[in-house]
Figure 1 (cartoon, rainbow, N blue to C red):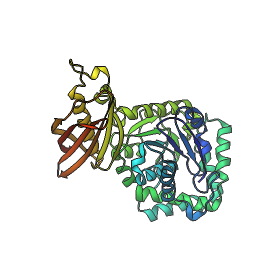
Figure 2 (cartoon, rainbow, N blue to C red; figure 1 turned 120 degrees about the vertical axis):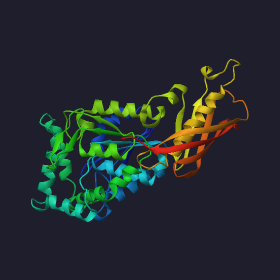
Figure 3 (spheres, rainbow, N blue to C red; figure 1 turned 90 degrees about the vertical axis):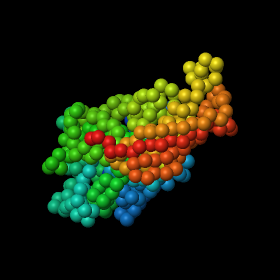
Figure 4 (cartoon, helix red, strand yellow; figure 1 turned 90 degrees about the horizontal axis):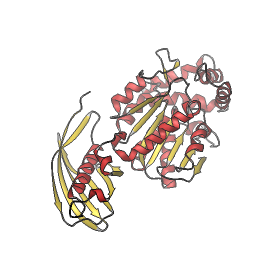
Length: 391
């Protein structure tokens, strides 16, 4: 798979393009972030500079390719950013490599298939059956832009789309609808990292793409809110389907803010953890790791790091570990936590590892271990209640 990789800081950003597009659609983001983040922008199979045949092209294959690339490049705490079809690809990649991903960004996503998979794929083929694929593709991409869109940008997008071989387009387009029908709900239900949706258009009831206004909703936005707890929705108004190009400054600012907030608490909410400087490092199924760099303000009157800091670290870590196992629509809260202080911490970095020991019904037990250097300074055991969230 062809990709462009530029070295920089954390978190690494992996950009995935849409149907009949290429990594060049992220050129405004590549230029903006290359000096501050590690940037990887890919060409999916049969797109851009990556070869491939019709049998190679599906959301499942593309997602597996991105997951394999994360492993190959040894990327950790990665933000996956997808546009249009690429939204599906990053969701599929996250399903396959969740431990390497710390956040998801979906740029102008949608859902095109809602019935059974076979019927959805047949509907996808019907979209170009009457006019032929090339005429369909030309109109499909022309309709992605609004009246005020840059004509040169529109022409470039259409030209790029028409370079996709007809055999590839005719095979891939129905498979997108099929994945939507068969896998979209499950993929969204599995999201356990902060998710940002940047939306500029939507498909109306006549399947026509129109610009979305601030404060408005759409079936896609409603789906995200219903399926992904804490999903953040940002509308970029007045542009077409390529907001990363038509409103690059706005999209770049949203991406910057999202990256900054990843360390401030789940789904970017500022609060107690941020005030203390607690930082999420990693998570898995039933596990989490947090850390904090001690400062003078964390000390008690005797000049020793306050025990409340270790307690807060353990309480935050246990909740985060349990959250990875919750079903859609579930929340949790601490009922009881017991902590044993074993040694005074040294100034510097404290690390807390937490794991879920047991869950039965609406209760769970989680343990935490807090370390200062090589020393275990505290162990905690927490009991949590699990309950349905109010809608």
